[in-house]
Image (cartoon, rainbow, N blue to C red; front, side, top):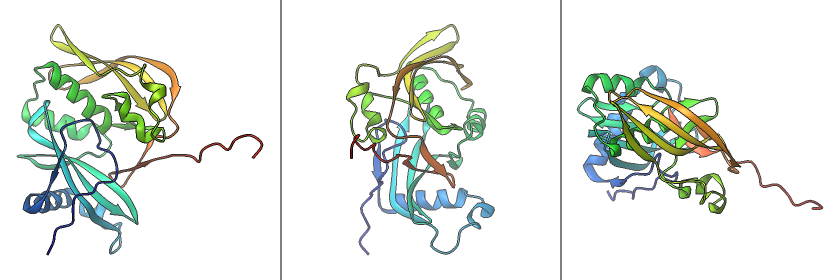
Length: 236
């Protein structure tokens, strides 16, 4: 049987060195993810309502060097979605919109964020893993990350969005970054303890919004951003 090519239609969760996983490794990762889901969660779906569709991509993380951040393509009740999970010796750990999976993993592995690169990676992952009322706190690697949320037009944001920067401050890390929450852009500052505890210590609205947002998040999976129809020109 010829394997279908990896085709995840949604953009990756965070900017990283993503690689398509193929062959037996793809099958194993898909199965480990499905096995990690609670039976009570899967029982809500009828036949064909929760299917693997589109393959698996994975990226290394400076903050979790013995784990991969993975995304699996899914079709849930007819909608193309992506499930995210961390994979390592502990198996597949689904990212479920709460901080608990990351805090539990940090405790199990004795997390130590020892470099600026690790602090930035942790901020990117944590912000997109944990959801509020307007979705994830999407820490931006560059203005180009906003293309799916502004119908491809990133020009309004290029001068406002700089790559994240980290510096040591005592025993902690401080990360400055632009971020999207819902449709609003912010300039933010995070303080990160080396154990992985993180807090936002400053945020300032940048005075611009994207056309679309937040990402749809349901059934432990991310869907396309909520995107209202474009406004019609006056007089039409």
